[in-house]
Structure formats: structure tokens, C-alpha cells
Image 1 (cartoon, rainbow, N blue to C red):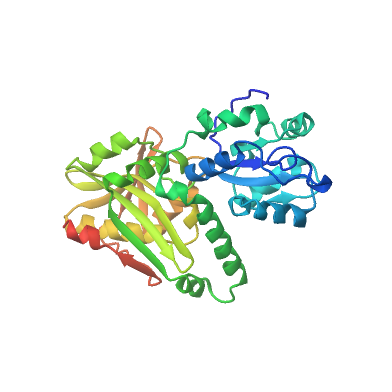
Image 2: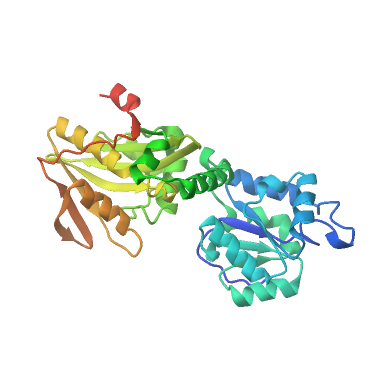
Length: 351
């Protein structure tokens, strides 16, 4: 394989079928046995939260039925099975999952197919069968194993169901949001959350106010720091549990509470839950007799979080070293949207 060493970690492995996932060519009577190590690799990638899909030149019906008989069909999202070029199929996979092609790896036994993909999509990492035995040992597959990671495939399937429901919903946006039966939990971050919380700071870029990256050890220190708050945010709705989708890190200063980091997973974009979290922070800061301020470091992709602050009533109160200081007016009252069922039971227990 060509060693290009892209910076992004792998989010999805796209598999060829004939001669790669299974022995032989399906149309010629092959496909009855998986290649050695394939099942173990598929299961381990799934456990780590690496998504998987298919790019195969085959007839879709027979290929999908064979995957089902082999017990692997459920592991592959948005499989692309047609006679188009493999690079085209991979682009469709990435679009269907909402990820960049630079986070995709491709496994194919054919040097021709790997070369076609490498030429059309140089960001994609291409592997042949000789790489398969050590695939999960490579650094780009070294991902933290969390509850959310092990459920990532299911989360994507639930997201597809939500998307279909949303596209078919007729009525005002507020009625749609109300129909979701959202339950938002805001609670102190626990020791068991640290790996997931650190992962969020490293993987979340769009809905991220400052881009501050924190390790599990650094977060543990902040949890034990009397002058800091670290909160985790989780969300569920009628379609399932998103898991932990947000993190808030606050510095408790002498005259104010300063939000150093506020991030939300892109999976909840458009649910308007960020305002609910800010309402909780504003109430707690006010009860402590402190103003609420926030750091915001603008970049090419996080304008949505700036709008969350502005819509909540924050105004710019200066800038230093590329960081805007946002301040919430003392007379501004934030409310939780009526379509969100807010659970603060663990925060209340810490009062």
C-alpha cells in the first residue's frame, strides 16, 4: 500500500467482498466462506466504534443475502453494491454516513481497485489482504473504547430512523421537536465518563466553543478542583439513547463563572438543546451571585456555537489572543424549551 499517513483517524472501514471479505467470486459460486481473520476484525472494529461498510462490484440482492447468511450483514452501514467505480462507491458511503473521505479506510484484494481509489481519492487509506492480520494494531485504529463507541453503529442506525421521520413530518418545527419526547440529563461528570469526555474534546469540532482538548487525566484533575465545574450532558428520545453528547467545563472565578469549554456532538445539531444547558448554567451562576461569561475561539466550522451564545443573549465583551469573551446580561433570563424534559437530579443532589 502507499504510505500517505493522513492525520485523521479512521472512522469507517469499507470492505470489498469477492476475494476480500470472502473466498472466491459470488457470481461464480464463491462467497461461502469468510477469509481467515475477517470475522474477528469486523467484530473488533465494531467494538471500538469504527463504522464499516461495503464497496463491491456485484448484484446487490445476492450479495446482501450472502452477508446475512454469513452473519455479518448487520455490521455494515449504507453498503454500496453496484458496477460503478470503487471510488464512487466510497464517496457514497462517506456521504451517507456524513463523514469525510479522509476518515475512510478501504480493504480490497485487487491492486487495480486500490490504485483506482488512491488516484481518485488520495485521502483514503488503502489496504490489501497482507495488511488484514495487523489492521487493528495500527495507530489510526487506536480509539478509546467507551459505551458510546461500542454502540456507534446502533447510534447511526437510530439516526437514520430519525432522519426518515423528520423528512416525513408535516407541521411546524416546534411540533416536530415536541414529538421527539426528548429527555436531557445534565449531571456532574463521573470518573466512568472520563474516557468519553476526553474523546469528545478530541473528536468534536463543529459544535465546540474553544477547541480546548483535554485528556482523561486533566479532566480528572478538574473534577477534583473546587474552583471548577465539569458537567456531562446526555440525551434520549423516542428513537433511542444518544448517550453522552455534551461537555461543559467552567472556571469558578471570584466574580463570575467562566465557561472555558462547551461542546455538543454533531448528532444533536438542530435539537436546540444547547440553550437548555446554558439556562441551567445561568440559573446556577445567578444563585451563586456570579455573572456568567464564556470564552469563544472562532474557527472555520464552529459558528453554530457562536449563534447558540448570541441567541441566548450573550454579547461580546472584548477579545484577547483570538478568544472572544462573551457575557450574559444580568437581567437576561434563560428558559428551558418546553419540549425538553430536563433531568437535574444529580446536580440537585450536589447542591
